[in-house]
Length: 294
Image (tube, rainbow, N blue to C red):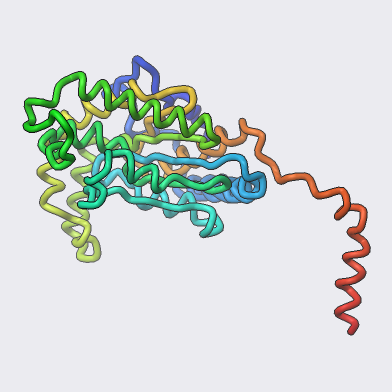
């Protein structure tokens, strides 16, 4: 795939979603994008095997984006070469009654990856500073002290929640979890086209919900709150990347390439073989070979 500097997708304090591209035109054919993704995905699967043996790091991938931005297919295509035990995917929907009995981060702690494994959050703890900010009435279900009505939700409430998320991710990073976060940046027109396809193709009808149109009417609010959250929570230990998402094949490659590039900065390797095993390796080989003769 023709060179794209993915470092330009990294969020800074001055990032503006309106100025970030939703599509990169670099004359790369679809087959070339698929081949490039396949190569990077296979490299990632090998790295995960070394990470499992190394047993020091885990990786948390957070995916956010508007409806139809391509999160599900991105997960399927990037991680298709992984050992199934090496990656766990969690899709966070509306909190259950049990989850609402705990603080909002509880269910995310429960889903964190073990050392040696990848965890993918399809939607994440950021729903709690995006969706609930667009729909503050949802907070009333959390039964928090001092929040009896929507008017009780102040700017300080959101400031504190952002601070809690930053502390959460800092704690993870300090304990060996590599946190990488991706916002799939979709244009409103491309979303319209994808929603239309869901209605036009019978095999995709099940994906459509009237609620998709209701949320679409709140597009500008979502963009505003996403931008605010991205800028306030993109840190050296848990960076955000704004990924152009109008072209699904390209967006999958960009995400996979960034993950691989970032992980290669860490000292992740298989452990050294025990000296006693190395000294006696020929003995072990002969013993196993002799069993075949028997």
